[in-house]
Image 1 (cartoon, helix red, strand yellow):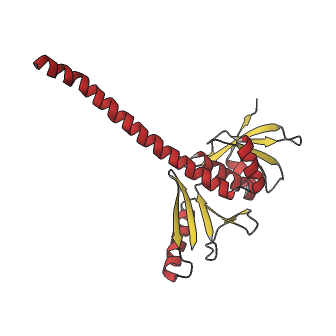
Image 2 (cartoon, each protein chain N blue to C red):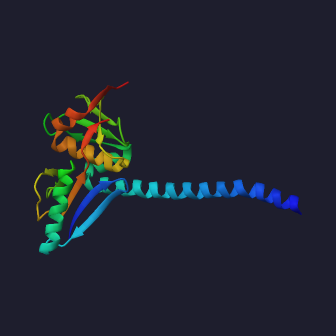
Image 3 (cartoon, rainbow over the protein chains, first blue to last red):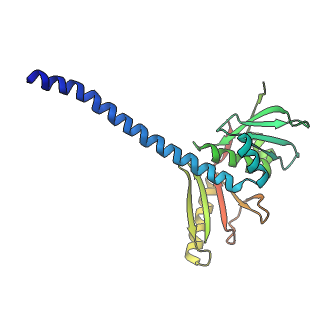
Length: 133
Length: 73
């Protein structure tokens, strides 16, 4: 009987810990999903109809820089997700700038869109560029 | 009802206020100044849906979006 109790305790303890971790993971995942959805909803509200259609089809949308008229493609993501396009619409240079906070993808993309459409030079002044492969 | 939307780690936080209520308007203006003073960019939308960055509080804006300062990634 005592052995059974010890065995039960030895098995039960790790099982309870695993169960707690699983519950915490589920809570975290649910919170993260809700935040992602909220960010995506806000982005969709601010995209133009053309950008929204493009985003729905390709998971990216294109914007026009307010100073140079250059086209940029903003891919779904939280960084290293902007491509400057050439006249043929092919990616030429990569640009990376992000809000200085840990934001969800929809928020990051919306901030990038507004920055390029309203203050392209300011955005590129802080951005890092990278080669497109 | 006017809204100030602040991007944060939860997606965003929304602050609704009645623009006809002087007290609520003052509070919204204070929030605007606090956020822009902390480096947030404030943006509104024009009637045709284009984003427009604003540096002064507009009491007639129905929706103002705030996002944190941009940095190189």
